Length: 100
Image 1 (spheres, helix red, strand yellow):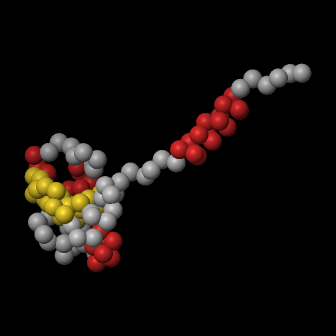
Image 2: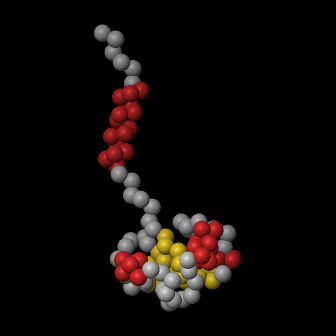
Image 3: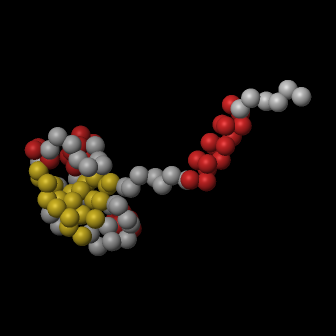
C-alpha cells in the first residue's frame, strides 16, 4: 500500500498519512484547518516496511483502509517539575526516619 506523508506547518512533529498524494478528501475539515497547509515529506510503500519511525505500522495501515488517513501526533511532553516532585516525594517516603 502506497501512502503520502505530510507534515504540519502549524503543529510541530505532527504528520498526516493519506492514501493518495494531495488527496485530503477523507480527512475532516476541522483537522485540515488545525493541521494547516500540508507539506509533503515523502511517499512510502507500507507493504515493504517492517516498522515506521514513531507510528505503529499496523495502526497506520488499518486507519488508511478504514478512514482514509492517519494522524501522527507528537508524544506528550514530559512535565519535568512534576517528575521532580514525584521523585522527591518517593525519596522522602523511602528514607529512614529519625527515632529520637
